[in-house]
Image (cartoon, rainbow, N blue to C red):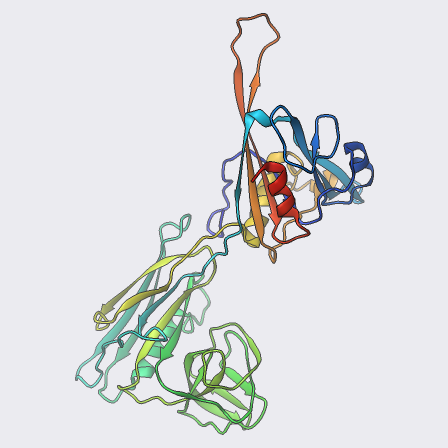
Length: 408
């Protein structure tokens, strides 16, 4: 599932999300009586807690204490458990947490190397520069397109100003009525201009704002260029000795007290020479779910397009496990009222997954054989079952304990 598609994955599985320590109670009955909400345990058919590797011939079940709200609105704790599982009739597998990677594609200069945008605005006549990005994320059909256009009509036009038109267009700066579709990328301008540190002042700015505030006198004026986290901005005006407005809103993560310096992790003044300084446009996906392709058109066709950072969906990141738990709750039956208007009458479980956590995921695929109570020969039916466990990484040795129990 992603932000583009809320359809269920279609796997009818019992799901468990584990953030607390594994059960310390030695028996299932003690677990039911005293275990806190969120605790999970693997128990043998006898009811004894199992902490070592499961072996052939054993039957086991998994149980977890779950918090919830009952029909009276009071908090209660109940047990969510699997049926008995034959060790000999299941397969265990695990997927370690794999951090998702947000896609970054650049046009022209990519921040460290690469060719320029290959434009020459001194050629008489109108020039139109176009960057087009098409979202290729599954579930987002018919794959929307975002375009940025910059138009030059005079040989005296400054390259930065024309490129900034494309960036503003992509970032929705011109969407005054706010009826444009949600963006799946945002754009920033890169350059190879040298950066110098401003005199011992820190910088504070917010995403989407043109206002930047310094901790001391900045000495800047309209037309100057600055670098913030490696991105090139132009000063539109300086309302005071400690504030400026830029021609393009700040598109990065909001900053508070950013240090001055000469690196891409600091801020400072930048030397920009029109038609000499290399420029590039960096396009970054707005989230982990999004990937896209980029093309350049019209008078920008000579520019180089580089996939600077390849997209990786990853596995076990917090937001995806939050969505997965919702599906698991529905399939488990304990949350069948979660979307109902009358849920307050019947209660609902408390979610465990946290968007800020990362998870290792475990999969138990079961093939249970059912024989009717009749004399041989009989037809034996195999029923497939699935159990999925998302265990927070590094959380009290949870993953390590499950590795031992499941032989992974």
